[in-house]
Image 1 (cartoon, rainbow, N blue to C red):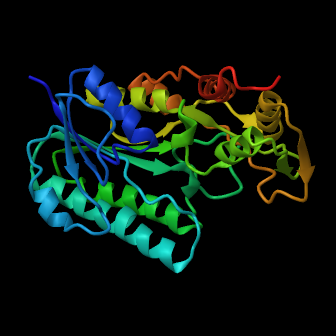
Image 2: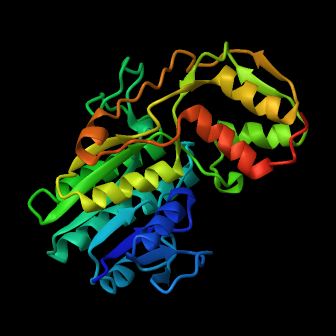
Length: 307
């Protein structure tokens, strides 16, 4: 008998990749989204739901026959203005809290995978970033993600639920239009329009970019492994400097890049340890940071670069 998995945020960057993989592996999937998924499948059930306007409890009460949950839905804004604070509270904190509370009341043994973020970590970064790194969220988004971690662990402490928290580095999809407004998306949009790229500071800051395909594989591993419990770093395990990233994108589109002013995060080195994810989940990322960027460019713009 197929297992039924609830996925929140199923039309998003990560959620859509996860749903595809679950369906390929004969899971039944229920997804909560404002818009209908582009995926059409007999084992996919869409429940139209807007976290900001719908009655959360009413919708959750209709969902009980599930064998696991993957919570990816989030409000992805990083400013500390009133709107972002309010939306982050409603989506990332209030909905998350009510979701976890509802799942505990079902009194069922099931895995619940919550997507957190490495943005919650304290700076300066450790030389090697493990799951034990100190926490110091400095944006409402980061604070809300850490709240979600604490909420899940608190609700499930004496329950049958198996809590799994993924702290994910910068996700990259093979579809550029799905990317959030991160440095890759901004630079690609500039370069394909023929504009030069600006690298702030010396360009020595590094970032770990992870393929959404690798993230989805990590989810599948966690669903199947009853020993998977607690916090896991999910990343590519490699990093690329801003200079190298700019060189890759600018070279692909045959535009220039320049260094200007200062980068307040110049000293950041995202050397993320995957030891726990490898040992417990068997997680082995297929793509490096450099490879996932190169693949994204070639898949999205094959035949359109001007080299």
